[in-house]
Amino acid sequence: MVQLHVKRGDESQFLFNTSTDAPLETVIQQVTAIYNGRLKVDRICSEIPELADHGVTLPPNMQGLTEEQIVELKLKDEWEERCIPSGGDVFRKDEIGRRNGHAPNDKMKVVLMRTVEEAKALICKKQVQANVCVTMEMVKEALDQLRGAVMIVYPMGLPPHDPIRMEFEEQEDLSGTQASLQVIAEDECQLWWAGKEMQRGKKLQDYIGKNEKTKLVVKIQKKGQGAPAREPLVTDEQHKQMMLHQYRRQEELKKLEEADDDSYLDSEWSNRQALKRQFQGLTNIKWGPR
Image 1 (cartoon, one colour):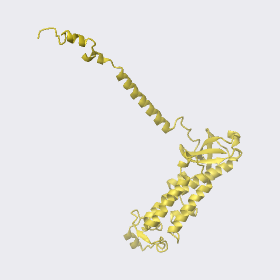
Image 2 (cartoon, rainbow, N blue to C red):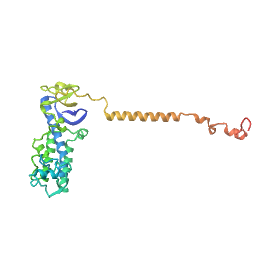
Image 3 (tube, one colour):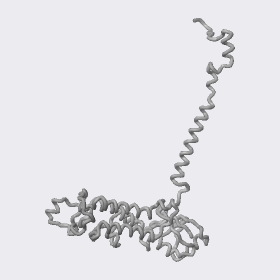
Image 4 (tube, rainbow, N blue to C red):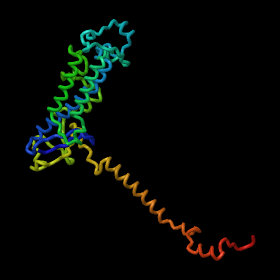
């Protein structure tokens, strides 16, 4: 199997296995699905700690308002009584006014946070170092784990406006957010290798031949952004090691120069005739008046 090391910019994303006779159209679709799926898992994992600390989100027309403003405007959260966590809730006020403050108890919080760590571990970038290829099945498994944990803690479900539920139902609205800049639509995705765009309509073997043991570093890019920057000749870690080696070498040379210093030969204790002169009474002789 051909192994693709997928990067976005200079940052590693995941490893992906394919074959040389695979159509690039299919490869791009699969790589894009995994890439966007990992982003979805990351977004959900970033929201669940907020859910565990402060409960479900308030309706959009109540977010950011003070309690006095809510009373004055006669607003009411219709989902507050429906979305009650298992085992009862613990009130923890959300200082930014985004969530209702009715958080799960500590036991249920542990369930959520442990599941977040397990889901992250499935699709994290450390899998590259472990030489583990990420598949769409692994992404779906991470999403299923997160969905199951939320259902355990909130058996009645989350409000339709909660970002976690919207993510699960593929209804998330990322417009105007930093996350929207990271997502790449399948029809806008490009794969680049060796400074060349891998054109749809061709096969992988048209670029790399038929060697199934090939390993490639490919870069995923959004259409219209041009060619990605080439890989540096040395990585940051290698550059640090080279600088460290150079510093150690300079220190060793300094010590060698100090060791070669022969100024000690002018010292009295290094004089080979000192013992003889002492027996002859010729020590401490000074010329000139005292």
